[in-house]
Image 1: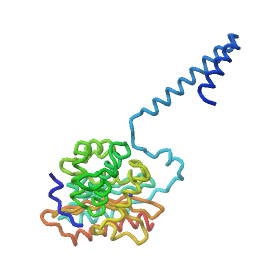
Image 2: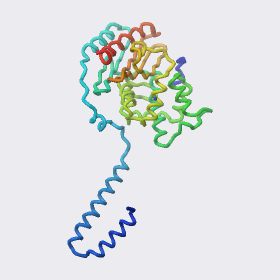
Image 3: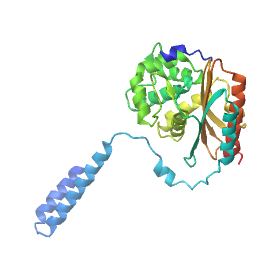
Amino acid sequence: MWYKKYTEPTHVTGRSRAKHFISHRKASRHPIFQPRIIGSVVIACLLVCGAILTTNKSPHINSGTSDEARQPQVAQIDTTVMSKRINQVITSNPDMQISVAVIDMSTGNTSNYGDGDGYLAASVNKILTAVLYMHEVEQGSRDLDTVIDNAPASQHLGLMIEQSNNDAWKTLNNEMGHPALQSWARQIGLSSYDATSNSVAPKDVALLLSNLYQKRLLTPAHTELLLGYMQNTSETKYIENAVPDGVKVYRKSGWLNDRLHDAAIIDNGVRPYVLVIFTRMDGDYDFELGQNVFNTITAATVDTYIKS
């Protein structure tokens, strides 16, 4: 299995109404009252049927449209300079495969750079495992206190995200199964995700993080729980290293011998955005070069969304 190969280190009652209706009908036999009574009954039935149909709808992702409609319009940001800088990094490193995805959560605008193919994602996909498990908790089919392999599920979730623990990841994946992960990914729009190969495109990771942060996937309580894990990861800070102090960063990275990925939600309290950077090299990965690449790309986004 792909996860075995990883060696990564260490957020008035109805009855009274009915009686009143019957007594009123007995007292009012004049034909003029009958259409009104029938009309009222028909309207009531339609309202009840409408409520039942609404209640039984299949679950969908909360698009947030109603909330966003009440928000003031946010000015668009010119990303021309940012795009130029990111593309320059990509062309200046021909020995490194680089793919970048950015989502401005204030406007929903997306920017993608480099190839848009799916990558072997390493531990970045642990976020999807966590989201699905919490979703199933909300659906009533699972519980955070359930003991799996001698530890509660909540402990596995924390270890998997904060310490990138592969044993915890394997435990939760085996508990839910790859078909469930694949189906859930499709339901929430991650078209490039492949559970068998553990691959996904950066643009879909960005979509996942954007929807997570805007509470479209989980309840506020479970969203905050997962974000809390992501804010306290023990991994090297690749994207976060280039983010100014005081700016909140929620992240998950992943790496193998030939690749380094990082995915982050960056929020200065004014204009939150998502940045996902996937990189790969033939042979052993040059982590020093990789850190420079991550710093330069992140700085371009910071200058655009935070410092502008």
